[in-house]
Each structure stands twice: as C-alpha cells, then as structure tokens.
Image (cartoon, rainbow over all chains, first blue to last red; front, top):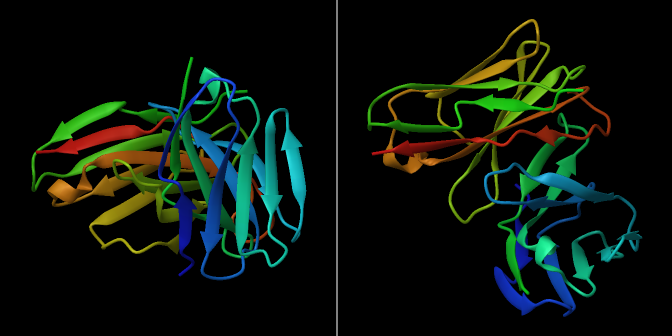
Amino acid sequence: TQLLEQSPQFLSIQEGENLTVYCNSSSVFSSLQWYRQEPGEGPVLLVTVVTGGEVKKLKRLTFQFGDARKDSSLHITAAQPGDTGLYLCAERDNNAGNMLTFGGGTRLMVKP
Amino acid sequence: ETGVTQSPTHLIKTRGQQVTLRCSSQSGHNTVSWYQQALGQGPQFIFQYYREEENGRGNFPPRFSGLQFPNYSSELNVNALELDDSALYLCASSLGGLAGAYEQYFGPGTRLTVT
C-alpha cells in the first residue's frame, strides 16, 4: 500500500508570506493530485501532475512533481487568508477505478 | 449541473447501532466512491461502486457495506457502530470506474458521531 507523508502537519503564517508544503511517497506515484479542503466541505481538486519534473501553476500556487515521481511540493506566493485550509495530496490509481490514497494533509492558517 | 449532495449533514448514533448515509452523484456520473476522514487526518478509501457493482474496497471490515441504485445514487451502511467510526464520511462521484483518468468530485460529507 502506498504511504504518503505530508509536511509540515500545521503551518501558521501572516498574510503576504510565501510557503511550501511537501508530499513524499514510499514508492513511485502513478499520478499525483493536490486538493484543498475547507471546514465543512469536501476536498476540491487543485491540480493533477503525471510526468516527472512537471511544474504547473495556478495563479499564486506552483506545483512541482519530483523527477523520480516519488515526491511533490506546493508553493504559495504571497499567501492570503482565503488560502486557509487543509491541503491534501493523493495518489490516483488510474488502473484501479481512479481510487485515491491520501496523505494526512497540511493544515494552513493565513492570518490577516 | 447539480453537484454531489449528501444526507444527512450531521448524525449522532449510539455504539452498536446501525446507520445509513446517502449520496447523490453529479449529473452524468456513473461511479461513486466513499471515504472516511477521521478528525485531523486525510480521507481513507472505503469502497467504490460502478454501475451498481462494488468495484474495489479499502481496508474496512464487512460491517461497512454499500449499494448503488440505477440512478447512480448510493448508500453507505455501517452496522454495529463503534466509537472509532466517528468521522466525516465523504462521497465522490466520477465517470468511468475501471480504468482511465477520471476526476472525482466530492460532496460536503456527513459528520457521524458515535457515543
């Protein structure tokens, strides 16, 4: 079973700061997804990365997939209070019904 | 287009009781997956239904069971509730089910508390 470790578990920063959160695996990902979950809501997909070394940008969010496809990072530039939430990485198994294996998440709080 | 909906929003049950949670999939989706998210943790895959058949199961005991109906809505049933079953139960719908890169769309979840 794929084990996904996310770090840090908690992060509290001031508005305007930059941050990076990490997702590491015990084995190679088939494809990796990042989600954000707000209190009382289900996770919402931010991005899917498939190719080693891939970099994707979504406004102030930059997602990077490691060359060996065993790790990924999410960098947020100039964080805003609206970025507050639980950031989850998940492996999607395309050959098993797209089943998702999630990491434990990074809980981010951005203070105004 | 209607998104994924779940009912009830919150539920309190006593240890040993049985519970049924419901999920309506997004329009056009034929696959429903259920996840359990304990407090402070990431979601854990329970099982998936594709065209009314179970299509995969995570590491959960048989007292966790499910159904999918012809309209692709789904139920999650948990028998003999235990305190550790207290969690947010998430339903996600998607197209496909066997292979292919289909995205899952999550509902808001049902918060179950077992006392």
